[in-house]
Image (cartoon, rainbow, N blue to C red):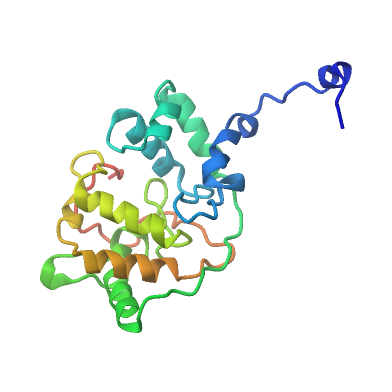
Amino acid sequence: MLISAAAAAAAPLQDSIAERVAPCTACHGQEGRAAPDGYYPRIAGKPAGYLHQQLRNFREGRRRYGPMVYLVDPLDDAYLAEIAAYFAGLDLPYPPPRPPAAEPAVLARGEQLAREGDPARRLPACADCHGTQLLGVAPAVPGLLGLPPDYLRAQLGAWVNGQRRALAPDCMATIAERLTPQDVAALAAWLAGQPVPAGAHPAARPERRAPLECGGMPP
């Protein structure tokens, strides 16, 4: 049905943050819940400090992905913080994960690395920084559940290969140097297969002493 010019003029565009960030959902899915292609991450409900820092990382060259760099390059910190706060404030349920395709031994290894680490190789547990429930820690540490396996593999691989960096001291880069390809595959398979409990949120404060100093995390 065609809309007349008069009708269009009678319905002015709402200048709200929800309208201005609508282009983000073209890749990140409806309301930032993650797209079905398995590559783009969910951003709804992530800690605001983490989202803000990642937007800055794209703008300042610590992360490389052309479309993201193009979008954020002209934006100042205040606007990036507004975008981050909007998506962080979305409290939306997570869909159930797909059953993992990996072998039981691989999944067991992924769970061990996530919950306990590997002290013999000086690999801290993911839970040491990302929360005992792996749901993240406010204001700047992301959750690791509710993410597609392809995205997890790609991001862990980017840390391993030096394509993704963070503010110094870069704790994730230090940890990634100790990961094998088998570790990356096991972590991605196990994490992607874990359900996110209804009403789950990032922890309000760190639950454990961080094993390494991290420039992207507040003291």
